[in-house]
Length: 609
Image 1: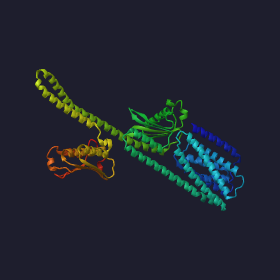
Image 2: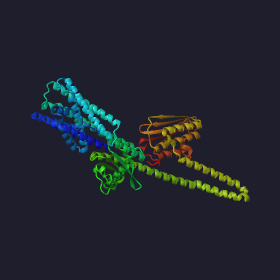
Image 3: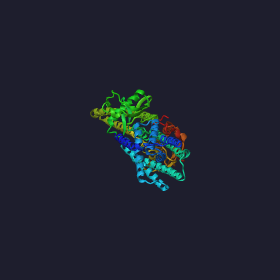
């Protein structure tokens, strides 16, 4: 890979620099105070290196003030060797790869050496004035920082993972902030030095202790900020997935969430289809170019997940001789790290999320736990999606059976009777022509009835306006249609802030509105009507009022189907809604229906709560 070749070049260059500087190496720490001071500075340097400010693509630390003092006090190579030893111990504790250690060490050697050579050549005279020392510091700091970041950017640009402009800007901002802190701290160093600063053990300890403390605090704050971001991603992902009924949207959401909380070179999401796990999502670095290889890697890791039935972490993936897919590429991918988590539904593996990096020991237990958490959230979302899909299939099957029964018991029987009577008419043309009129009239009646049944079936198949436009817009359209067709002045008002409720609750309100407006048109003899939709905090209500002749409710209940009261009452009971009619003769009518918030999302379309 290009990044590995670049690192090899940097390591070679660093070795050449060490070879050039080695003859001048002499660590002079003969006084006891110098030994103790060097040990304290080494310990401080270790703490700062071990607790850096983490970024999404690396870290930033505040080691420059200590390194600058070591370079001035003991020399370039001496300071670099101390830094490399500290970095080695820190990397071993953090289980970083050898490649990371070699790159960081080479970067330190190259950037500090170029900066050191530049200031050595530029400032040949002894620096006695404070301004000269500050200028020396500025040149050293800026040159070492710029070269360090150029080398880091080069590796980030050629590595497999994407390095975006947004990430570069974020890195540049943080590095600028670090440079300002370093400059301010070392400015204090020169200020105290100008005030007869002796540089003994106690002064060094108290001078650098705030820097170490600030580094630890910054590390903790940045770490907590990142963890908070991960929790927010998990919460938002869970919230978004629970509101979607599309498997494709859930998979897209999983990819976005993974991209925000975990790093990877390539990733795959396998989903169970037709008795096997199929990769429905493949993402990462140059997916199309390396798709076949990624699929081979993913298939082998997925089998390990199926065997263990749990999340697996492979720090160093080594293909076996039986894995023929890797016979030609074994060398290139023997140093690959993986994490893979199963998506379980009812204790069965429905899918697997696989992430890989082309570097060993790239994933740790916290990454494994994070992917496992994402997989658990995804499994709940997919389970809901599957339940809804299964319910939709059942409802479609029930609707098909209902239509089949209606056609068989109604339209088919009517058409059979029409056919038989038409055959009778043909027989009566010559023998009994006087019967033709009655038979044809009966046929016309049956045909009209069949046509009406067909139209009702077609209308029943159409989606309700609430499904097309939403409740508020559907009522507004219905009221306008009613006003134009019936000539009754109708006012529609909305109270409260609109919010979403279940589709079935919207249907209940809309159906009772339709029935009420139909009754106003047929029986009320009204000239005005008012429809009010009220979005209260704990319930939603709809009222339909007219200035018509009204009626006696007690008498109306004694007559079957009078004003459709029975129909509206059944609708309200079906959807567990509160239903009320206020009316009196010559005083108009008001019909109200109210659904409590507890039933907004519990009402099913089949009316069961």
